[in-house]
Amino acid sequence: MTGIRRGLSMALVNMGLLIAAVSPPAWAAGPSSLDSGDTSFILICASLVFLMTPGLALFYGGMVRRKNVLSILMQCFVIMGLVSVQWVLVGYSLCFGPDIGHVVGGLDWVGLRGVGTGPNADYAASIPHYAFSAFQMMFAIITAALITGAIAERMRFSAFVLFVLLWTTLVYDPLAHWVWGVGGWLRNLGALDFAGGTVVHISSGLAGLAGALVLGKRANLGKETMIPHNLPFTVIGAGLLWFGWFGFNAGSALAANGLAASAFVVTNTCAATAALSWAAAEWVHHGKPTVLGVASGIVAGLVAITPAAGFVGPAAAVLIGLVAGPACYFAVSKAKAALGYDDALDAFGVHGVGGTLGAILTGVFASTTVNPAGANGLLYGNPRLVLIQIAAVLASIVYAFVVTAIILKAVNLVTPLRVPKEEEEVGLDVTQHGEEAYGYDVA
Image (cartoon, rainbow, N blue to C red; front, side, top):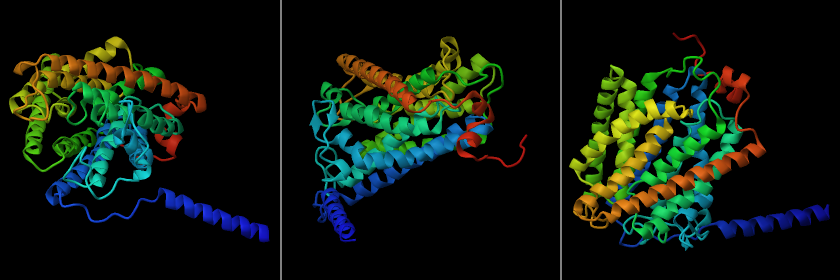
């Protein structure tokens, strides 16, 4: 009995030491450089970006067959939990912590230790460090969620959970440091990515392509009809994404200022233009404009303007939208069939292609009259920026695709990636989660 008490006492002491080691210090009130307007703005923008993932769940959920809608919703909401915890424990430090070799952040801020209510002058001098960290966390969440569109309707849930944790840690975190972290090699090169063309959209799009290739095609693809089961869900999701994207892009100014207003305007302009240009391309090519096409065009425009939002004006946003709509439409309607991969909900066709297009066009249209902290692009006498943007795009494509494929192969050694064909035909809602979205017959 004495030995048990002694062991229990030692365990309690050790637990106390562990808690003391990981607990953040008490924080005094933030210094006078903090701006309450900027802080309020960023917290609101972080909330808008957070809403994008439930919006994406509806956007994707409406496009799958009815037997798989809950699986998509589950994946998106579980990502919100998994990545939130990973971000606090290690993700933020890997993305934005003190630089190690221009490749990744150090572990100085593990558990958000050293991140508090005061500002961090390296990233945002007028808002609390906590606010900056929370805003960036929402980007990590939505990026992982975007991948689900490419691998929908066939991935085992246990494998999915392990994949998300590994992918966020090994792909998203280092890539975010390359582009946005102080000391990151693409940032040092001069690459411009205002809100995530490379970090968010190219990484998720190429990860989705890798996932589609490694997992293989859905069972009976081409032999049975696989059409969206609830287009109103998809349209509502697109609306929520458009709404949340204002926080995504305008918030990346990291202050309530003129640059945020400019980013807001060009974001809306490009989304609107791409919705029209996608519909026009579809009308000419397919004979009819569709509501799914307009919804997809909205997202394509939002993706394409994301890297450029803080560097271009409204006229450039129109031009980017005019190109993005048809480019992504033909990537979805033609390239996928020609190349034979099963990107179920077109994550690569919209995010991979749109992100690549937007990143390169940033190098064409960027102007220091919009943002003195940026650079002039090709139209303003600096063709070198286009080359830098292409280098950043290629680096992001190669890294995201190769490492994602390796992660998937490694996960498959632990647990099979795909559900058996019989379970796939029944649907993931029942076989993976024991639930049905609709407890009654629908037309």
